[in-house]
Length: 228
Length: 228
DNA sequence: ACCTGAACACCGTTCAAGT
DNA sequence: ACCTGAACACCGTTCAAGT
Image 1 (cartoon, protein in one colour):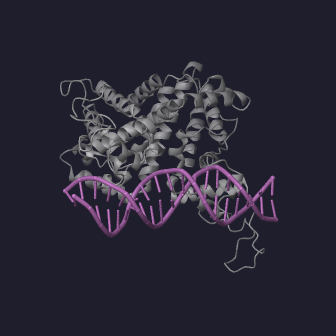
Image 2: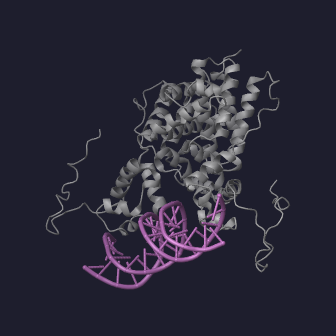
Image 3: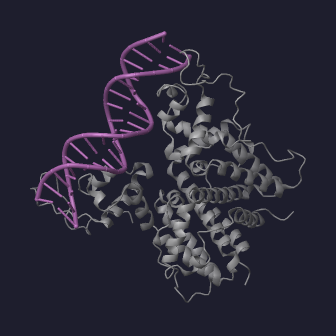
């Protein structure tokens, strides 16, 4: 899972002292830039991506990237969409379980974004790339087959979008800092005379995010999709 | 509503050419800094807030702010919470209409954030301030009175949080750029063979955000809050 | 206690130049 | 066509110094 893909790239620089010319770095390309950007974003977050560092990691001069990319914003766009590929539901066309397909699509979407905690908060801010558009197209088609009227389709999609995005952004932010979360709950305890209810329920602590996500999603779908 | 509070601050600088000493600027204070930060954030967005410009607007030297504020992050925290004050439901204690109270609280919360489009996307990333905690406390208490069991309270709150945050962030982002949105839908039309369903329903255009928000919220509450 | 300018350490991007 | 270093225009923040 977390193993480095050492084998796939044939010749990495083997040390600092190799003879010049013997270090065969793969040539720069849009794909390599995006892949490395994702690595850096995973490691350091949105604010931690620096163009210079990105170029450095690619073994290139600081300004070489601008041949392949207009600016930093485009790096974000490409990295974001690259992370959102979807391979479709388990049984591409054979399934009659619309509800199951929809849940699968939305949970997969959420999982993708949680693997790259910077992605969820970026998604609403940027132009929609082909991968997320593909997801929306498939979601739309499936909702339609499930019996949602054309007039209700946009409402249904946006309700689900809102829920998934909100859940994932929140989950990702809270996940970043375990200590911060504990500190927040502690601060709450100190102020327990002001916030007795949420202090007592330990709102900021040990919450079952996955279960809560699934439960709220079920309620939404109950309302949005008519019973056959 | 949007009138400047001209009367409250007694002496503003009256022009550029006054004798030195005659221009009585209100003294620097945490409150003034936060209020001006909100103005700048409203005008230029999250990325548009610069410490120098903020100081400038306050008629202070660039570094004076740091006497009142640790760093820029704290400016964000204070500005964010300052925007989230809540005055409570229409009838503070007399109401028996739990459902109505909850809807009121959540719609007011959303409205507050939409008045300051930068706030929604900031909220999940920052520590929770007193005002948002107060809102959560009140929401929690009301849900509890409405019959939500203690064991289900956190799930209910987080489901609603997720939905409101997701809806508001999305709405705020799409609202920023009318042209971008049209351009996006146009791009979709160009690719209509790839995304026929969402192209046909004009997903990226003329959507009834307020109505969609309300409808999805109702479905969520139907599921979360037991009937009477 | 409160405020300041000069200076430092960045970071995205332009540009003119190299191969 | 592809890559580069020097340079510019920022921006947050430290610091030593002023009142």
